[in-house]
Picture 1 (spheres, helix red, strand yellow):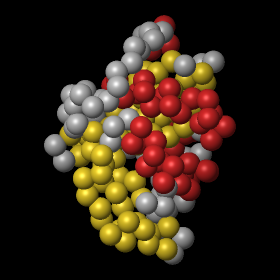
Picture 2 (cartoon, rainbow, N blue to C red):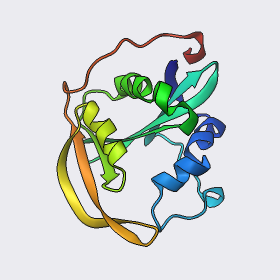
Picture 3 (cartoon, rainbow, N blue to C red):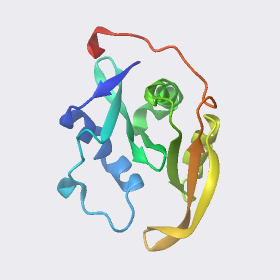
Picture 4 (cartoon, rainbow, N blue to C red):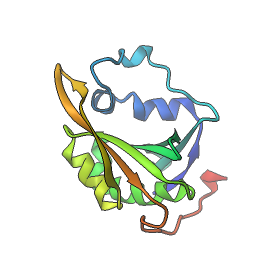
Length: 160
């Protein structure tokens, strides 16, 4: 797997607007994905995961509190084989500021994934996330500098 920054809208949309991913990452207040304009600007950093020169995953970083918030998305058919590896490698791009994630309690598998990297729950927003008409607690997690395992990044001509 090759992991490197991308600003290619087609690649980013192919992951974030994938029907299964979009359904999972959006709450009841979100519009249909065809009307959703994914922001690509200086406030967002996108890290792509590539297998055989095809994008299969995206890590999104953007400013939040005293650090950045992250969102990890891996295409469903690649999760079992590549999710952990992509998480490890894409976290190398996070810098030294604290890293945050907001995860609804509905997605315990995503919470477990975050815990594997050292994220800790710092706050719970009760009944703050609505999916299919049902409310769930929203967990705010934080990863402080130095808590995450470090891995070697494989360089590639793809990443320039």
